[in-house]
Length: 173
Image (cartoon, one colour):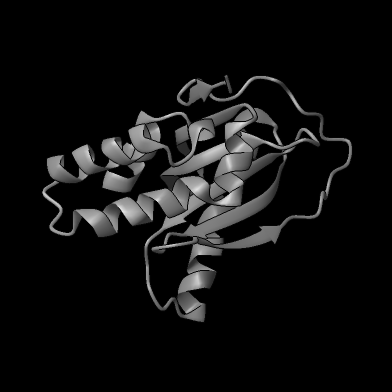
């Protein structure tokens, strides 16, 4: 939660300048984190990750609240997409921040299932096409980014410029 708070408090396009590091330190203190330097390193790896920098230069939405009917057709699903941005081709990309160490294949598959459901919820709510899912595993140093692309099943689906009103819209400076 602290990592999300940092990333919401800054402009994604600004990167890891001194102001970013100070914001990360302040938030680590507010959350009572013991190893502040480690947390700042994780936050720096997140904001410096290619998908986050890419999002910072495009329209993006942070902490997007999602809700709708799940894949079984009866269960109501609620979730929060960490970051959604509009890619150059007009499609949306979902980015999820992770701090796990030593992720097993079954955990990775669970993450893909979660983000695939988020993609479907976005499509249900907006008609928007999600072309890619990106997991950003935050690490001291460089984040590890793992992506999964979707093929466009319905090429007649048209993009709309609007996005769910529950999301905070951020435009690059």
